[in-house]
Length: 452
Image: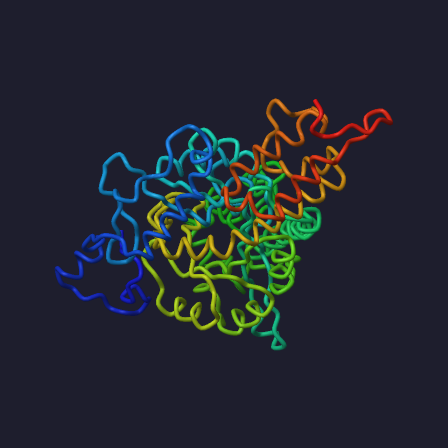
């Protein structure tokens, strides 16, 4: 696996063919972490292992057992130690992936992933299943979504599709219904778009059937280009997925079609307004990245993908620096197999990169959690309680009233979502006070939440 942070990974540059360079690509030398890296690693692991830290089980890994390689990626000295791997871009069957959320989490565990962002296209319907499975494997889930948008400058010829990753707190977006409305509209457009692609292929003398595409997509899943491509392969019209895209389905290709995607700036603003972190996905696929990055930065973009499994792309790293954006990355795993796809957890993010990501994201996520909790404190209803536990199954609490489970559930959630310092924040203390004074209406009688 190629080491990260090396400008030789810039596409087009020729790596030096010598033993020293080959050693670097395998990870180079190992050295003790600097004071900055040690502090960053401590902060990152505290968040990753919140469930362990707030229980009587084992605490976070000992810092003395870790070193970093030449690229700032943490390495363990002890065989039994767990490397802290973040996977920030993955897909399941709920969009165009091949695995169920449960199987995806299981595979991530096998690959050593400790933090997994499920970022299905235009849906968050797989998050609950991923969270439930992740508990069994000790994996932390970042609820995410990859939103299909369109960048539409004044010059129509420069219009192109843009994908925006959104990362949310463990309790998900504020104003979830508003975000879901946008996503539902995109999904509806994906049906129309896929039907148009099939129609265009039919006109090109490829009699692909719509039923074949929807069967591959699965019940309730909005079909995308990958589903059309898979149907083409199964029908024998092309040899593989790559050929389907390169001949017919590429942007502007003979069977390409657009859907009802929102403007990229509109999506970025909504992500920000609903308590999410907006990140530009695979900018290297864009025809005109600079004007897009500039426009989206003004709309609230917080980061962009720079790291891949084959290294850090120097040109895009420089662009991120220019526009003061977080430098992130993920495998974009779909589970299709083959040498062309990066494996889960194959993108090595340096410890300082992970720290910067959480340093920017956590205040945003804390704000979202606070907003959702305040809504419950003002109106302790089943509906508002469900908003808190949107992506977590209520377990034994399911079907109970806010009277019997509200505060207990919130305490349980907060202990796994927030650090001790974050929970002791004055604003959260004020919310807890409101909760202790709040009451629910049971048969016309107002009863305090804490009364059991």
